[in-house]
Length: 143
Image (cartoon, rainbow, N blue to C red; front, side):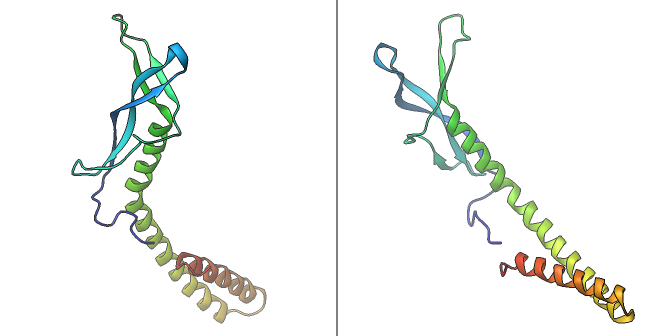
């Protein structure tokens, strides 16, 4: 696996920025709502949804002074997914490396067991070795 974030420090975070976009129709048209932005560990904006055409704006009328907050739910969900994926990447690579090492060890043990036995046990070991070989090839991007 290659690093999807070369030169971009992790962890990433999600926050919002104000868009000047419009939502609603006719007399119910409103201007301005929050969209999501992704920031790197240094606070640099990596991505934002200011120009997104795929928005689902929600409003919250919770303020007694009539304040309305509006935000793009689609960009919030997409940004959270991307940030979770990027932040999880190093742990997934480490886990993959551990699993590959374990499979290689198991493969060696099974080959030895297969060579020491004959008949059904040897065939079972050979079948397991073949499955492990296929998994290792897939982990290397060969299958």
